[in-house]
Amino acid sequence: MTIRIKGTGSALPERVLTNSELEKMVDTSDEWIRERTGIRERRISSGDTVASLASAACMNALESAGKTAEDVELILVATCSPELLLPCCACQVQNTIGAQNAVAFDLNAACSGFLFALDTAYAYITAGIYKNALVVGSEVLSKLVDWNDRSTCVLFGDGAGAVYVEGTKDEDSGIVSIVQDSNGAKGMVLYCNDRSADCKVQEEACDTFIHMDGREVYKFATRQVPECIERALEKASLNVDDIDIFILHQANIRILEAIAKHLKADISRFPVNLDHVGNMSSAAIPVLLDELNKNNKIKKGQRIVLSGFGAGLTSGACVMIW
Ligand code: UT7
Image (tube, rainbow, N blue to C red):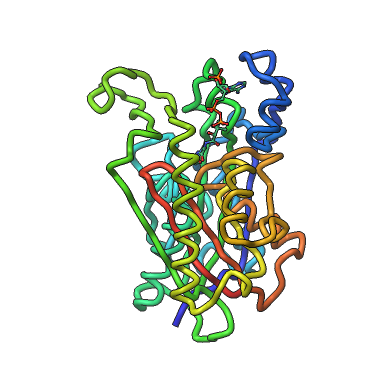
């Protein structure tokens, strides 16, 4: 038994923030941002919340799966930027979409969050506890960004993506293997205090903004992710050449190129949407998945690798057949 994705959905704020607008806000240039990251523009919330974006993405995923909210047994929302500590975002989503039969809770593994939530759904469904799940990544990072810090404010965007998954005994589709890693010893290379910050965690920075040692995260991603993908492939008894599409966390085009080079895989097999949405943390993978699915860029039977990496530090990969 495994799980397969039956429907995908996404929701993005309408407001587009371009690199040239950022040039007027901090000492940066469109050229620097494009060359160092690949990002041209991102979406920024003007009123959308993590819960409202997540709910819209879920409705979209249910429509794509041909299901109703009453069918849903489990809602998992991955986020690191919820509006409320209580109740969790997943319960807000449950209420908004009318999924009264579902159990709902959040989890936070930053940019690996969607992947870890998908793995959690896999564990629940293959254990026979639930039959299906909505798995969501939703972020409004713009409220955690220091808009005076050019080293981070050019990177992030807001948005949400969701998938509807269900159990299947069909061996020709679904998740084949999963790998997850966490390294708490490196936690402070990418961190953000709680918004009620009492500054106990990192005394020198008493604010509630995202702080990142970009070079350390870059090194981690380019070393750890290929290794993680190779382990997931080995567990699936497959190799790099067997994979049609690598859907990776969208942080930086140079990271994607370095990973492709390490794996000796052509970059054309690594779809990119960070140019128009930036880094949306847990929402990055499901939004890209929805773009590809809705544009018929993924065909039944294709072998796909999903891989996420980010704060924690966390990383993960899974191999699936579409
Ligand atoms: O979502 C998961 C977590 N995040 C990531 O995966 C991000 C990983 N890291 C990265 O993608 C890259 O490290 C960054 C895009 C964040 C930075 O790129 P970099 O090539 O590593 O630049 P750098 O930090 O080494 O900085 C190079 C120079 C510095 O100036 P000096 O010291 O050489 O004079 C920075 O001050 O670029 C400067 N700089 C900027 N210049 C113009 C930093 N940010 C900017 C900016 N505009 N926005």
